[in-house]
Length: 462
Image 1: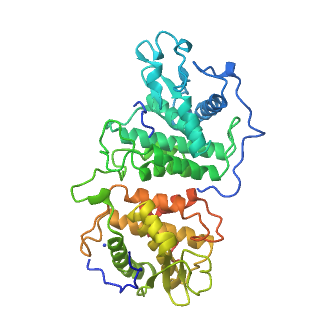
Image 2: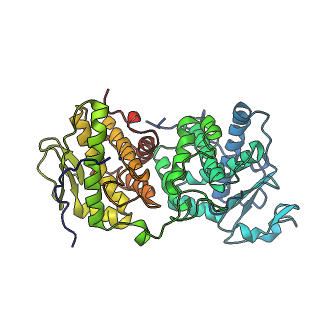
């Protein structure tokens, strides 16, 4: 049986896929284009092998809106006129009809793919300049992860088609091309959210479904980031998509060079149990590094010494403190204590997601304690956003091995993915962040901002 999260004594710092690809913040209601979305007639956008199934119509609608977007966007950001793709192919791997395709199969004579090889996949063929997809796969993605993941898959492949025009990564690294395609898909998704689309609409909660769907599409944890088919970690892919959505195509064009940060990494011999530390160890390590980190950066940020809060666990019944009623996680101003429910949150998050889900759970209310000491709010939307951002900043120190003099524990592949999963699964729960109208997509964006840009971006201090 695991012990309670004991109150901890502060210490002083010693010194801080798509599996077969070929080659701002949203607030309020997102809207469709000028009028209700309308289906694209088949004759206006031919797809070889297409059926009358709704999923094929949905894919065609996405492709038509992608053509409209890139017709305008390509000249503005990449120079030259947009060149339409040579064609599109739909395959039903569950009920394959080979007679629906020409003798060259999927693609063209110079790069022919048998229809059965499209099963479970969607890809862009740069030789033939075509996109092919398995509609059974698209239907499965839609059923399991929400309808918007289907057009995002199309947008990712369309991104590869645009790379075929302006150039793939000079380094030859697949992970650069794949995450840049995610960024391009994010920029297009923002265009849809802003009402540019004629054939699709976007509802804000669907963005949460999309980023959850990226968990299915990431590389396996511990995969080689230099593999010829590497797509990136969960954090890498979600971060790239958010880049495009938040800052647009100029970022997608300019921020995916050889110096881009990728968190995907192979496991090392020291990464036991797939990189997951024992429950008690992660509690101890986080309880050591949080006060150490804040003890060092707080004076620089706010000009005063940091007085670390207590950290305590409870079982089921929240402590008697205003604002913690019916909560699994929170900060109590009255006794300056960070509280976490072990039975309902700490243990399940650790067991279901991993050790860095628990680290994230502990760091979030701790960041609220930091804000309290800084004289800032702790119970509104700005406080929640800032706490998530500050948690990203803190976890970036683990990534940079800044705690090496405190303990022999380094971040493992997949740890940052676990932080993102925690925010999407638990962060949107009122028992974690009550009465705050914030989507999981926004929380992930805040975490990413802190991780990449540091504390100055997290609204701490004047």
